[in-house]
Length: 185
Image (cartoon, rainbow, N blue to C red; front, side, top):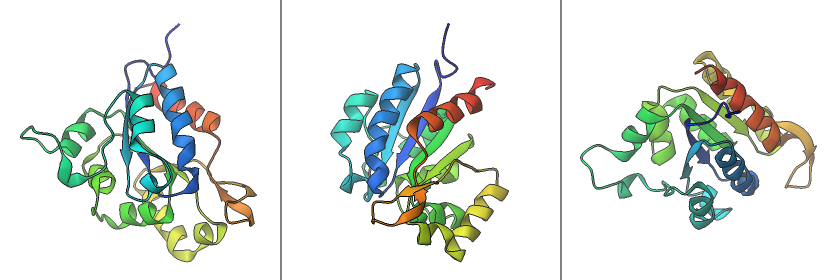
C-alpha cells in the first residue's frame, strides 16, 4: 500500500527556533513516506540546525540564500514553488508569521511563500508571550483568513524555562495532518 505522500513535493521551511532540531526527524519521516522534500533554511534556522544534516536526510540541496539560486534562467524559488504540493513551515517563528502576513520577502522562504499557490501549513514554535501578543494574534488571523492552516502550538515546558503554550506540535501530529491534506490531492 502506498503512502498518501508518494510522489508529493513538500517544501519544508525551517526558521529560527530551538524546535528547528525537530526538522531532521520531520524530513526523515516525510522521506520514509516517499515524499520529495526540499528544505528551505532561514538564517535564524541555520543557527539551530545545519544545512548538511537536512541535505543528507532530504537528499536534496538546502535553499538558504535568495541570491545564490541555480544557474537556470528561472528564479529557483519560483521554480520550486511551482512544483510544490505543500509548503510546510516547521518551526514557524513569530518573525516568519509576521513576514508572511505582511507580504514581506527579505529571504528565500518568504519570497517563495509569495509565489507558492499550494496549501500552506504552519507549525508555530515560540515563547507563549510572543504567541499571545496582539501583533502575532493579528498576523495569525490574517493568514488564516487567506487559507493558511496552523497546527499548534501546544502547551508544555518551553526552551526559555516557562511553562505554557508555544511548543511546536509533535512531529507525528504534523505528519498526520500533512497526510490528511495531501491524501485528496
